[in-house]
Length: 184
Length: 395
Image (cartoon, rainbow over the protein chains, first blue to last red):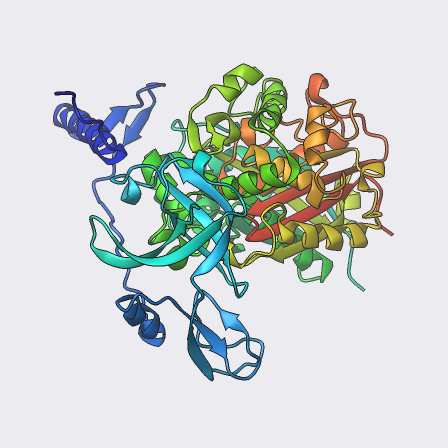
């Protein structure tokens, strides 16, 4: 049995655990969390306090968007006065200074404008394999940023046809959307 | 009638992983140099502006921490944020205060201590610089990722290659190796750049600027004060600023940063520079090369060449000293480093010294017209600032 390749999260967590253990041993001998920088030997202090952010963001005015995902629909807003379409959806039209909007379903088909592979991942994404993020332009001109369902960027090209689809993200089990390449 | 504004003092710390100093100690390094350079005392400063993006460092109110440590308290102060262009925002505000007559001497202090947090946290925080909820929450874009989207589009449209991008890194490391203030002071080969690992395909490690700590300080003064303080005032001849949409999906182009184009137009107009041929006027430029693709787009957004020809400039070595226009002969963000909140002041401090012909001989650009340009971008074209400096007093 070959050992499973570690995720970036496992590697980061292991490195931090070793580091914290090292500082803990320094604290025991010095009485303060002071430790030498690994490269230069200069004195550093490891913060006793820790701060974690997990924000609560209002989606009251855009709840239609999130409710529609369960029906497989991706919605945008449209100003009833000037016809401007907003995605990401917003309920106030800054052009008309009006808030009289309607919810419309976005077209599914579009073309891939550009893409990248996120190899060095943010810590909160480090449990995923490398993922591809792209921007696509849909048939009505609206542009959408999302993951692209593909592992190898060599299979993608600028201008290729894609389909916008609602998907359930694993392992978190929540609804979001994805750009799926249409291969002939 | 607004007043003319000149730079009368600059300071620039060594950039790099600066675990040997804390935030106010690091700020003091450039504040002290700038005060000495201007020949003034803290009491002469009317107002000080601290640019710091922050979020990853311990002091949430860096302006007052630095003010106390550097003996600037109780002068009025504010901390400004325009992501990686925070420093240029500080300089613009300082300029506008003096131009409007509400202050005579203003100090812009740029500071960033990136390395108070581990790298995964930094990737997390910087990746949120854009539209957090719609582009990060579910899709985990990173800062290299944002620029990689532009690299993919540019390479597709104009036939540029990963090797072309690497040439920017090679040039900027060449000059970084000649700058004692630079984070990286060693040359690299094209092969080394090309063999580095992918960070955000098609961008590799050597396409990316480092996570730097550093500070830089610029003291600006009114014409009346400047003439008393120095024989070589460096005038702000032009200054422009613009912004881009927070969502990258709402941009018109992925091969240009519109905020940079608009900021350049404003700055050129103010300075009387022909935007069709700015290289005729400008002796040396510092552009925002947070990633190699960013420098190539900057050539085009600033009008140094036509659309699609930025890649030709680097292929033909036209942005080395001796070429069409020397760019980032400090090492740029790529090799000099990118302490986010200090980068704007760092560019202006470098260009002030270039115009005064005070930099290391091997990287001194020939000064013919006495004009220099700084192009400083926050986020991925979220903020755009262009500043034009001149040895001649603007008309």
